Length: 348
Image 1 (cartoon, rainbow, N blue to C red):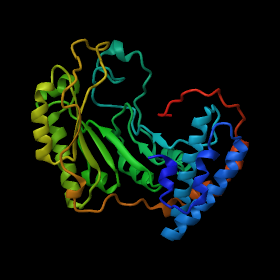
Image 2: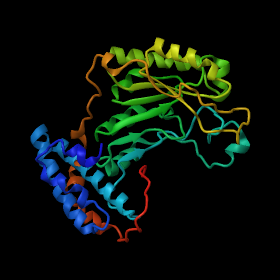
Image 3: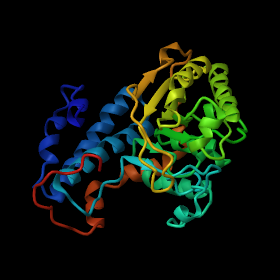
C-alpha cells in the first residue's frame, strides 16, 4: 500500500491529497519542509483526538512525517538527507559461538582472516543514546546482523527500550546456548524471532551450524513456546528457518514435523547464498517447498498481541524531536542538488 493511500483512510484529511505533489522531484527542500511541518501538525491533531495521549500522538506523527521526508529524498535522489532511517539494524553482539561456513565467525581461519570483527556486546547505555536519536522516527528495528544477539545478557532490556519508541522488533538467533529466561524474552515485547535450524538430526545439523547443539536448540525452543503459553502472549512470532543444502534437504520433512509438534508459528524453507569460497563441500540447493509455511496462526493464541511499550518513559526525547521543525532540519544539513531523473533503489 502506498503511503498516501494509507493516510487516505481519513478521507477528509485534505493535506494528504497534496502529499504526492509535495514530495515530488523538483520541489525545493524549503518548500518540502514547509509542507512537512504542516503535515506533522495536522497528523498530531488527528491522532491526539483519537487516542487522547499527547506523547503517543507526537511519536506517531513524527514517524509518519519522517516517512514522507524519506520518500521525498528517494524520489529526488538526494545524497544529503534531513530525514532519518525508517528501519534500524543493530547487532546486540558481534560475537557468535558457532562457526558456520561463509560467515565472519567461520572456523576456517584463512577465510575469517578477511574480516576485522571484534567479539564484543552492545552496552545498553550506547543503545539508549542511539534510540534517543533515531527511535522517534523509525518504525522497526532488526536486532541482529552477523552476531548471535542472545549472547548479550541484556537482550530483553534492549527489546524493552526499543518498544518504548513503538518500534516493531525482530531478531534472528541460532538458539544454541543456555537460555537464562525464555519468559524475559517473551515479556520484553519482542515481535518476531527467526530460529536458524538447518537439520533434524545432530550430524546433519552440525555440518553447517558448526559448534551447534541441536538438542539444546530444541529444548530452548520448547521453553519459548511454553513461556508464550504461560504468559498468554501471541509474540514473539516464532519462525523455524531451514536453509537447504545438498547435505540436509532430505531432512526437510522431518524438520517440518518437529516444528509442528513443538508449536512454532511458521516454517521457512530458504535457499542460502553459496559458501563454496569457504567450504566447497557445502552446496546450496533450491527446494520445491521454498517459501513461508504457516504452522500455527496467531489467531490460535490467547492474547491480543504485543505488549505496548511504555512510551511515557521517553516523553522528553519524543517531545524534543517533535518540537524541532523540519525547516530547522533542512538548515542543519548542507545543501545538494538533486541527481538527474533515473531509476532508484526501492530498498533504500
